[in-house]
Amino acid sequence: MRVSFDEVFRSNLNGSFTLKVFVIIGGVSMGPGVAFTPGVSFLGVDITQYAGHDLDIEKLPDGSIEIKGIERESEHTPKTPRGTSRPGRY
Image 1 (spheres, rainbow, N blue to C red):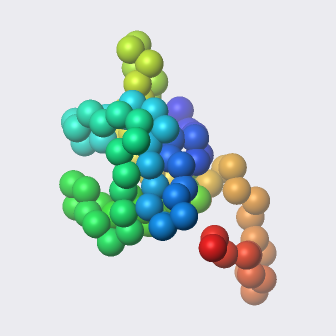
Image 2: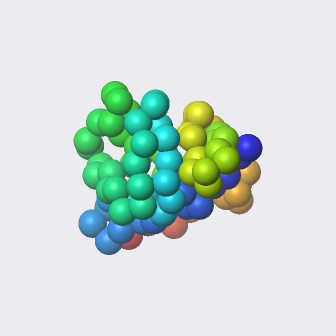
């Protein structure tokens, strides 16, 4: 199942992202409130670099989700034609 990054993570004013739900990433379980900070690797990946992308997830019977992968483009974000700019996140 494909969902937007924002369905799983909340953006914080300091640039970090906090989990909204219970997730499993690479076999590691985490609950709501766990924060990921830019520049910090988790299992070799800076999770914050994928804000705005879609996540490939599996919903588990206990209500948690397992993040299986990250999509290069988001189905949930409007496409911006080449040569134009999109306002940044502040």
